[in-house]
Length: 438
Image (cartoon, rainbow, N blue to C red; front, side):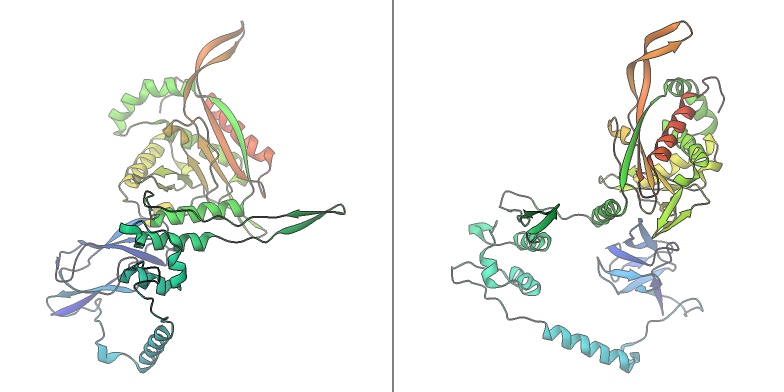
């Protein structure tokens, strides 16, 4: 029998590590060739790691939520026959080098040194604390006196795991800002800023841990707001001709191309054409340097079933005709909903589009997807009364209209460029020929 090392595979040039989210097999389970063994997550996408061999899982080297580097061995599979040249064998415990032993001993000593004085299971006031709560308190450096201040949601006011974790979270997020003195034209003003008040948690409140992806998105959004000077421009576009044209050709399009024609690929193609006219929207900023991107890679924000967002990227979008754009949009959207995107398919975007109208919103002010410098939000298409200009005079009629909102980084994109961009997009969409083919 031979032992095969299952390693964390390479998942794109910019992905160096991944988090173990779930083991799909237990020790002792049989594994087929190409059968998924473990689920992993990166800051880009969630995916599965299949087995390169058939055999029996005999070792799991990382636990759930552990962060693993690309190329690290994550499990060992026992297979029949001899080890091939492409397979590797796990060293036995006797093969550990002396420096590794010394390092391990230092780690153990350090861990022992950090152990604090055990917390009594019962306080002077008679409150009882479970071993789990006491262990968390000891690990986080919470004293018995501090435990006494926590309002318990358990039976008879007992402090539960959720209570102490909420206390720790509030403690980490609360910061005290000292009063500041501001001098303005010789006048001294004192501005006393109060510290953030910790959130009170009682037995009727529900504590929900943010998902891994939710935490990453939250950090990404905050970083973007702190990095870019966000400015928005808005414009209303008459898409009546596009609505009429799509209604006329969508059935024939489906029959001939095997694809459902939605408004999204029509808009994405127009946006790609607009970017070609204004290449300084298709840039990135690095310090005091502007990087002008050669390719137009459109990010398409898509909602996942759990409410989070992911942004698959349509590479070289300006080179696609409407059929090609429709195929790309439908494929990426469908695989986004089933968590089947590959890491490379959500990288290297140069401009992002989000369809807030799919949720009924008339307009939105989206946050820039760093390191890009602009993002476009498509509002809902609505029937509205509008003034129609003709050679015989002005009339009131029913038109199909939508708002487009453009968020851009005012450090490098001024109002003229940001406004002209969506003005040109408006002109392209409003000049749509209802008699054209696809």
